[in-house]
Structures are given as structure tokens and as C-alpha cells.
Image 1 (tube, rainbow, N blue to C red):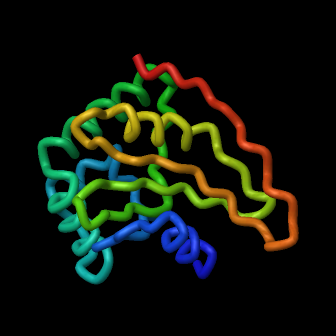
Image 2: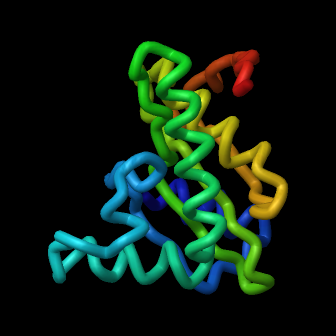
Image 3: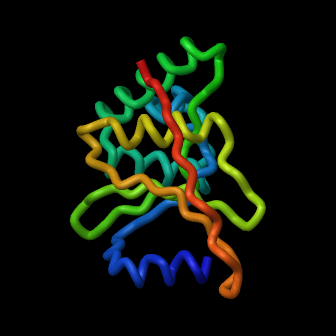
Length: 147
């Protein structure tokens, strides 16, 4: 987490809010309806989604995600680890990879949906963390067809 904070500082990111995202909000209906949420953690996350992304935009993202799932043998697109909200209101979706960790196949379509959905105008990044004296991992390129 310390390195992530350093990253934010180095990038001069002005962050007003953020959420750790361990929920399947891109495909699960409860993130639209609010039904069945646990009050301690899920309810605040739900409120943040609706505040910063908006209900209509969230519904559209779920439509795209579920369309992808239907056309890819039920494989659900997966969300990023973190959602940060800049002082300007711009969203940043961060997928954090620890040493030895790799991106899973369903993460790329999820990130691609978030990046390509124009009303969000979101910044989407995959960040690899590694020890200070280690060689940085080589970036990979991915091609995802959403239609």
C-alpha cells in the first residue's frame, strides 16, 4: 500500500475518495437495486458507485458486461482492485499486481469495458508492484473484442 501511495504522490494524483473493490459490481444486480447488501461494507460501496458512477451508467456497464458474458461461455468480466476518484471527479480504475501475480483472462475484458465506456472518461491502469532493487516486469499488450 505504501508503494501505491508513493505512485499517487509521484503522479500528482489529487484523490478525494476511493474504494477497495472486491465485489462483482459489473455483473451482479444487487449493485443496481441495493437489495441484500451487508450494511458494514457493501452499503458504503454501493453508495459510492451510485454517487460517482451513477445509476444509469452503472446499468449500462452491467448490460455491456452481461452481453460479454453471454457471448463468451458465461465468463464474467472482472473489476479492478481499486476505484479512485480524483478531485475533478474523474474515475481511475487500478488493477494492482504483486510480484509473481499475473493478470487473469477475465480481468482484461472488465478493464476494457471500463476504459471503452465513453461516458465514464475513466483512466484504467494495471500497476505492477515490485521490490525497489528488482527489475520492473515487462508490460504486456492485450487485444479484446467486446462486440
